[in-house]
Length: 222
Image (cartoon, rainbow, N blue to C red; front, side, top):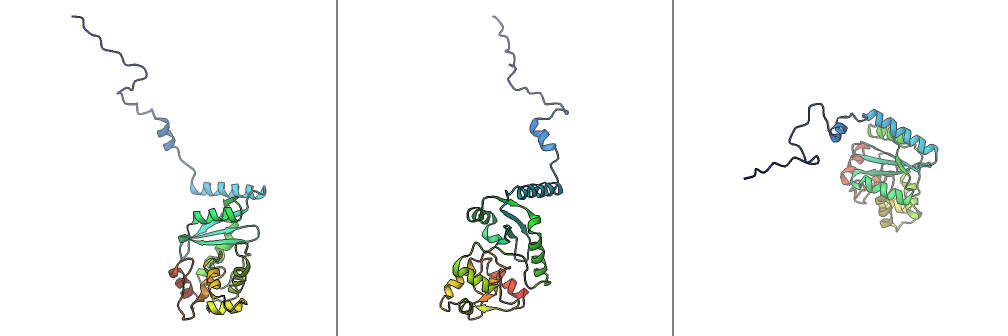
C-alpha cells in the first residue's frame, strides 16, 4: 500500500508555537505604552480651551466641582455664569440642553470657572454670604426672570414663602408660577431659590433634592 504523506501546514495556518519573550503583538505593545498623566492632560485641555476661545470657537465653558450637596456642574458664557446643575440632574443631559439652548460650541475649560469655584468653596466653608460673579440670565424669561431677580435679594440666613415672593415680584396670586420659577432656576445656590419655603415653614421641593435644600438652609442657619 502506498503511504499517505502528511500535508504541510500552509503559511496562513496558525502555529502552535508560542511567541518568544521579546515578541509583543501590536495590541500588547499599545497597552504597555504609558499614557499622559493627569497634569499633562490638564495642560492640554487648558491649551485647547485657550485656543478655542482665542479663535472665537468657545461659547460655553464648563467644569465640575465637589460640594457638600454633591458634584456641581458650572457653565459660563462670555456674559457670565449661565448654569449650575446638581448631580441628580444628569450633567451630560444638562450639557446637551445647553448645546440646544445656548450653543453647541461647548468645551471643558476649568480655568474660566475658577472664580465661581472659589466663591462656592468660600460659601460652603462659611466665608462668603453673597456671590459676586457675573450672571447670564438668558435661560429665564418673563416672570421667571423677575422672580430670580428678587431671589437674589433675599439675605443670607433668611427665608421667604412662595406667597411673599409672588407679592414682591408684582403678582400676589402667582404663587404656583413662583414655585415653577424656583424649580427651573438655572442658577441654584448662586441665585438662592433654596431660601424660598412653604408658608407652613417646611422646606418644599428643590431642584437639587430636598436633602440638599435642608443642607443649605442648615448651613445658613435658617
